[in-house]
Length: 273
Image (cartoon, rainbow, N blue to C red; front, side, top):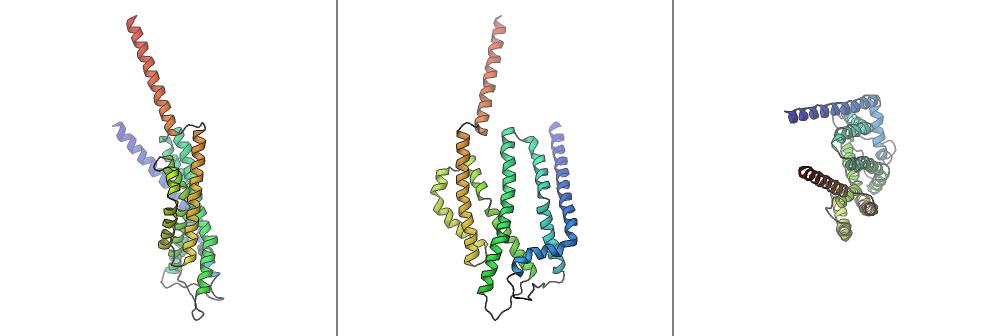
C-alpha cells in the first residue's frame, strides 16, 4: 500500500513539474507572438543575405505564411524557457540521488545544455553564412533562387539538430570512460575509425556539398579529441585523491561491515557476561 501511494505521489509531482514547464514555454511563446514574423526574419537572415538584391523567399502553401513563423516562435520559446524546464527536471530527480550523484548530474545537465546551444549558435553564425554563400556563388547566373520558407525551416531544423548533437561528443566520451564502457587508450586507438565515421555521418546528415560536410565532420573530430582530454583530466583528478562514486560506495560498504562486526562482538560479550 505504501509503495502504491509513493508511486502515485511521484506521478502527481511529475504532472506538476510538466505543467510548470509547459506553462513557462507558453508564457514565453505568448510574449514573443507579436514579433513572430521578426523571429522568422532573424532565422532567415543568413539565407536572405545571400539572395540577389530584391529577391525574397516564397510560401507555396495557403497557411504556410502563418504556420511557419508560429513554429519558429515556439522553438524560440522552448529555448528561452529552457532554464525553467531544466530546473523542473532537476527538482524531480534530485531527491532520489546520492550526494556524489548530484555533484556529477548537475554539471552534466548544464554542460549538455550549453554544448547543444553552442552547436546551434555555431551552425547559425558560421555554417549557414559559409554554406549559403558557397551555394549562391556556385548557382548558374541564368536562375533566380527563391527558397520556400517551409523547406528552409525543415533544412534549418535538421542542421540545428545535427550540430547540436555533434557538440555533445565530449559529454558522450566522458560518460563512456567514467562508467567503464571503454578506456581512454581504446578511444585513442580508435581515432582513425572515428574520423572516417565523422565524415560518413556528415555526408548523410548534411546537404550534398563538400563545405557543409567538412564543417560538420571537422568539429566532430575536434570535439572527440576534447572529450579524450577532459576524460583524462577527470581521471587524473580522481586518482590524485578525490573519491569516485565507486570508491565511495566501497568505503561505505566497508564501514557498514565494520559496524556490524563490532555490534556482533558486543552482543557476544553481553551474552558471556
